[in-house]
Image (cartoon, rainbow, N blue to C red; front, side, top):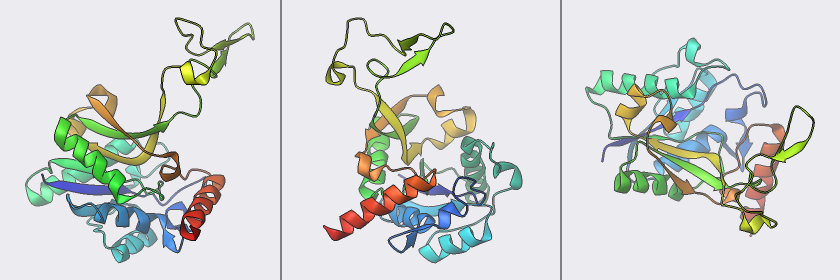
Length: 233
């Protein structure tokens, strides 16, 4: 299987300025994503899509390719990442004359992932041939048990009332949160669909401690603490 990895790393982060260059254990988020992708034997190329020169330089230093700079219209706060995936695929097709068999997206915002997590997604994709493979973690809140919505009358009600009463979290149907550890997608599907859930989606469950998503400053504190704890053990 011909698989390429794509790392999308926009320069204009608002929650944490310069987020993709923030370091954990002496390695930037962008470098950690490159490391994780390069550690998967089935991945032939690691490409970074960015609009930032500093990120591009750090990516190249870590061993990735930056064959293009992302256009401004795909680097805004409101730019759908799905379109960034399409842009990268079209570039690869234009330069090589073919699409890869699999697009492996490795977000820079999950710096505690391991290469085995990415490899597991690629293995599911190869074995089961879905349109997309996503990563998930066990949900912290369950809509059948402890997630509520407030009605127009101000009353609180369960988001998803179960058919029978659920009095313990352990008895509620299992739910999962989507994680940003990795995605694997069929390139032809990305080019024709408008979103991943238009197709057949499979999931790989990742331990919480490897799926921390860096969105706010507290997330970076948590990730650094987990990394330090691992290094000390």
